[in-house]
Length: 73
Image (tube, rainbow, N blue to C red):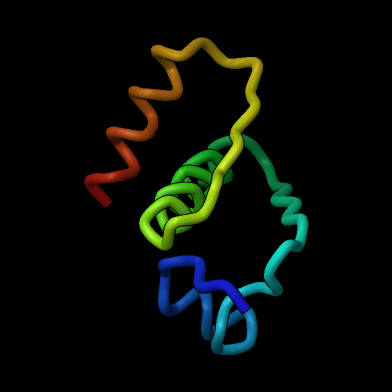
């Protein structure tokens, strides 16, 4: 199991996080925090020494701005 880096989310997922090498699909309406969750999961993975590929159609400036915003929460 892999920790999300968010203890309350790990507990919700079954106390230890999510299965290693699994795919995660996050869906929901605009503005609910899907991108912020993705950034947090990526950050957590990088801190744990994992590889974290990320693909988006958004401009780099938007991603960097959003990541800075999610890091402060």
